[in-house]
Image (cartoon, rainbow, N blue to C red; front, top):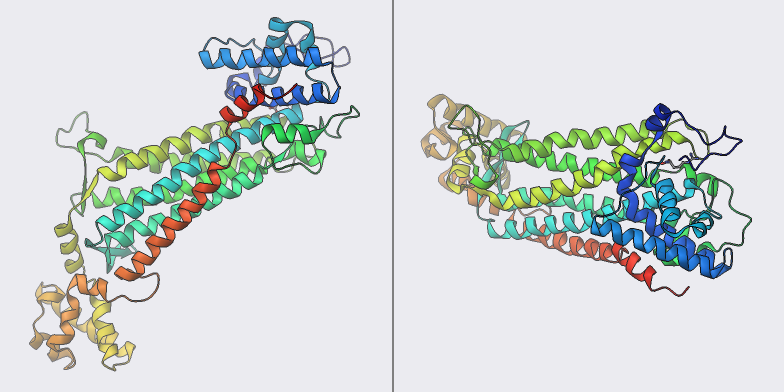
Length: 481
Ligand code: ARG
């Protein structure tokens, strides 16, 4: 059956090949819950406004509720139609008969799909927001526990300066906090209800979008129907927030992949998140982190794909927009799945403080601290920089690290390098002496952790206010009609 055809569109038939080519049902079946919730709200509004008779509105609503329940019970088999919207209407007709023909009054699949997609994006963004803010909280807790672990930081993947592990944790915590902010923005972009604008220009039937808005938990209704049916900005925003999360998650993954190599040796993975090799018996591989990094390519591709789909479309709805489906529907599982595995994996990474300290010393990472100690004694920074550079060179020639340099060796380069000055080379002291805001110094790190904690909590709080699909359905069931 092809419901969306008339004599004018060439009669009911459609080449099976064309039907197969154009059907989105295999993908948008995943939007069934969103579609049913939207239809229940729509029919409630149609009944209340008298656009259709109350008895029929009630029959349709009961039929849609039964479809939701069959779906939840796993017993719903949808007919092969062009898309989920048609499949629901055909199935409704099979179960309740004639009244089903009234459901689509004052509605087009154009505003219907725009509504389903916003409900979907809202649901995914709310779940992701809960998870990413929890991740920030977990990084904060872990940071406090391991604040005394000192490891080298890296620039250009060359050892740079000593930092605390708490600082490393807070660095990714800060990035994930921005992802939480991006998800709040996504929710913001989903707050206007598309339903009621019809195919493009509205309806002459006496509908009331305000009723539907309130029933579906939107904050307002969209401003212009022509824009509404062609707008996928909210979907792009979710894809961008997802791609950006993956940029952060994949950088963190690369750090951990490196840290757990024998070459670094800073950390190791517990057995239950490590993979082996089918051939090399000795292997303990960080596949989980590699997969997170690998999936980031998919997340970015999805964003680029949808941008390309919407670029250059004429105003209003175009069927091209159906191609949003694959990238958008893939995004929820991709984002939520990776977030949850990341949160499982992080506590199963154990850092080795001794190995980290060796990295600090071997990398001459306290060289800047020594230069700053000379600055404190009145030496211009550029001179101190050269003096310490010479000392590093001497140490390298002798195969020793900075802490092994004798006062004699140091003073042969510059007499200001006395024993007291050289004492700044102790790694914990080097970290502790960082006083500036945003630095690795313990007080600055604790201030960062407090900020991360407070802001993550506030963002999570915003997510809890978002009406979730199951709640919307439960409340729709009891609405007066
Ligand atoms: N399956 C379509 C989509 O996902 C629904 C809207 C179809 N509208 C139309 N005028 N053919 O975009």
